[in-house]
Image (tube, rainbow, N blue to C red):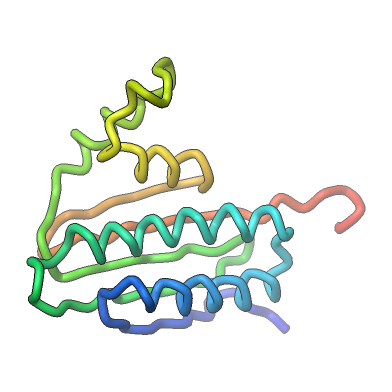
Length: 149
């Protein structure tokens, strides 16, 4: 079956207990697309981090919010979007902090920048748009080995 140009979307409460549902959906989709177990585990960590950022930072305490998750199947991989409608943040500043982590020990790292650093390390592309909430777009390309072709 040709999975290209197929999209799976879900809107979930921005609560920690729903992150497992996102991870399970990612596993199902990415298994069908042909990603390896290791690649899927990396993606699960990155997507869980993006979702956790929504749960922790997007909405004021006691005010319910949602997160919109979209899995877009591509010819050569998958694009995952995690969007909220809460507070925005300065991505450029956080990305700069994440880039500067490369030469620091774990004790010197600022906890606030670790999530972006992790997503950048585990995914092929990370895009962040911060207008009317925040949308994080994570892209992972299939890396087919010679045996799989």
